[in-house]
Amino acid sequence: MYPSELTGSYTIDPAHSRFGFVARHAMVTKVRGSLPVIEAVATLDAADPSASSVRVVLDAAGVDTGNDQRDEHLRTHDFLDVAAHPHITFTGTGVKHVGGDSFEVTGELSIRGVTREVTVPLDYTGSAVDVMGAKRVGFEGGVVINRKEYGVTFNAVLETGGVMVSERITLEFDLSAVKDA
Image 1: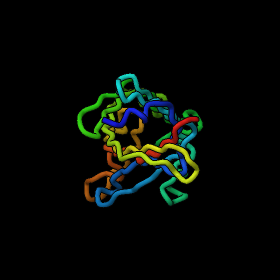
Image 2: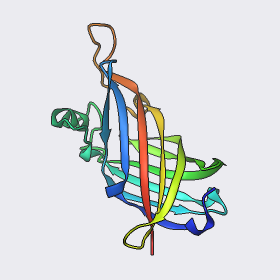
Image 3: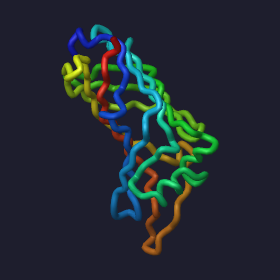
């Protein structure tokens, strides 16, 4: 369990955090990308983790895989449809301490206007007071989702019989949060 002095409200630091994803491409390699943060806040309650909360809003139009052509395609109706759905959101509905430094955050993930419940395993990676005197905490984790469950169904069959993009997408989280004054 995390120390009781960490109880409080936090803002996730987008400059030191990553909201990423991994998809298998052509069934032979992985493509990694990230989404910029619009809003990311959390309230931690060390005495009662179930009273903790989290809300994250990501900018779907800011998707970045390091390839401009691919990123433009990901923004279209084939994938994220950012014209109609500019944000990806996660609203936590419960936090459970599962032992040691491990937690499960359950919440509603909304992509392309489809909302589904997911449980994200997160590990508490520690805390520190940074050079500006701010208390920071860290968490990391990830979860696998099926993109088709969120209406992201575009694909192409390859000559070898596989598909261009995997259905299973791994969401990755490396989070640094600063305690609010």
